[in-house]
Length: 455
Image (cartoon, rainbow, N blue to C red; front, side, top):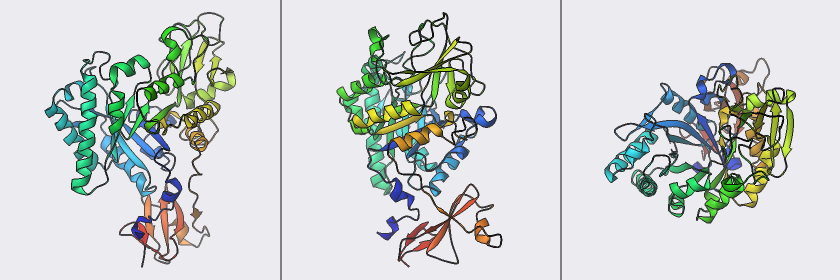
């Protein structure tokens, strides 16, 4: 039993009930953003989230998982090495994307044989690259050109994959791989794409994409991720909000504890066409692209925070979210801030959901160099609002100039190391800094297991 007392006390700090998850997505294309906006796993705080989902891998013509970027496998290693610092962290690989504009899932789910080939590939690939699970990002079965019967085949895929994950864990005496999915927030899409009560039984958690409810494709302004319906919403738009979306998932049989509420770290912009600047103002297309994300109609939080000082900021009280007008009143932005995150967490808690998922880490001010609010201001605020205890604090090693311990980690990879001078203590190296930890009374540190155990 003593070996279960892992060296890092953070396991005790971060060991919450399974219903309290903070799942954070990262994207492999964020590495190509210019300058200080470039993001790789090296930028991840290993204590920030309970789970990290790496996006994105795809499926090749042989129904095998296949990387997309030239350096994906290097980044897999760097991501999963963060568990040397925080062993409680879980990592998943997300698979999706398109091949020639078509979802690769469509061909893969077509027959029992093709699904079995994919499942075998997934297990092998996840084990080889040391992931804790798989996230399915098929957007969306039975929708937008996908055959209607793919709704049922998506259920088959999840059912067969969950069983295969169970068998793999039992046969190989390994921890069972996790299985999750990103799913739609729009009611019509939910109805067309998912057999909710069936897939919810086998998924470990479900990332509801409660964002992109409105955007520049519409003729009037609307918020990207509103909590409730607004007074300008009519027709089907009365359901374009978090409350309606999640309520529909629950009504269709999804257990609340498996649903994770989506928190965007970006906003959607419009080009205004009249002097009106409020919610529901006439608009025609997107406002200009940001300097770093370089996509018209879209701004990351680290781009948003810099323009707010020269913008007019308003609060939509009926939806519990902010918006801003800028560019001499010609551009409109619906975005999220700490206040709207807090409102959403209160709603999420009252609804007894399983936690939150963030899209994405790489669009928060991850370096703290843009907003003067520290690193990861939105996600850190989300973590605090959810009631997680403070991230672990450690005792810095002595810093006297003659003490070599203070410089122990210089030139060493991140990880745990024994202290030859005192076996009841050990060092944690993280980003060149040295931290000294102590084992529980009666135990000593063993490098063979990276843990504290009996002498």
